[in-house]
Image (cartoon, rainbow, N blue to C red; front, side):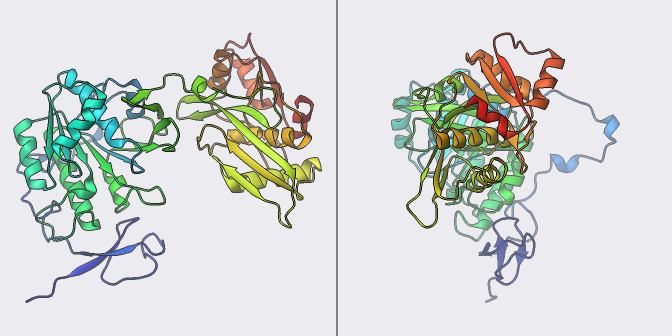
Length: 461
């Protein structure tokens, strides 16, 4: 018998090689090559015969001859979900939803299915992890369902394709892709080969027959979707469901979207009856914030096109260790060390013999440069033991020489500050001048303070 041929695939970029190597020749990442059987020759769809009609019948067309058509989106009934998708579900799209185990991915999609079914849309929910009775038990907690939702516990792609042909749904849920297998591909479910082939089949199905397909993907310990990296390149939209399982809120973040803006987020609160939308996240995040306490400031950050008010806390104290401790929760640890070095060099504040602990309250993770000035203000406030006015908000980027640099979407940040009742806004001088010149933001209820250097913060602490 002929020896079965095996290849090694890169989980990051999909590079193929006949022998294992420590470093991928394609993306130069280390320890990412995994062994898997070679895909069947011929069709890229797991050995299936290619359909006669479809994209293969298209011919090259001059761009000026292409007719534009507006894609009609289907609202999910959840405004926070629609915001992340860019306004609703695009027919024929392939959406990947990732997140930690138990974070609520299946619950979120089941709630979406319930609302779509109530609106008269046929939905096919394919589960490879739960039986129909187990899904029904979760559904009883969420609410009542109509007969437009079809449950199909199955893992074989042939049976799933046949069910799609029979039901003709508008939306298909695959939960999860790591449990599905293609009978024509000689590999274990969840392997690189199976995930790649099944994604190609689902992509072809979505483009040919028009249903919107949502794929649930497991994540690795690093937080990335398990399987080959090319999985994220093949789909139209990539959503990550984030949040601490011990916290009440969850965030749905769009990191890729061919039909709308990226980095949009939707905020949900986990309750006994499922996930509940949070329409005003700023007020939600500010609940329980202490007033007139040293080391506590409020910053306005942007997530996509949405402004957020977040509390930043810092604790600076004399150390008893030979090497001072530094801890950063919710932001970049190296960025905190950099800003502390700027304080020592530019303001002459000795922090080399102090422990420093920084926390973004509420469990959020913020990596935006506009957080810099809030981190500096919180560190200065805790170091000197003096609080900042509780009705003051900050945003701005800090450079290595201590200068405060402009940030994007300053007008929306100021408008959010006015709406939530803050009376003073400390921002980069460049942004202050541009806002006053534009005149498109009502600043009558807030005092704008432009700063050029971090030393100017000392008189407001």
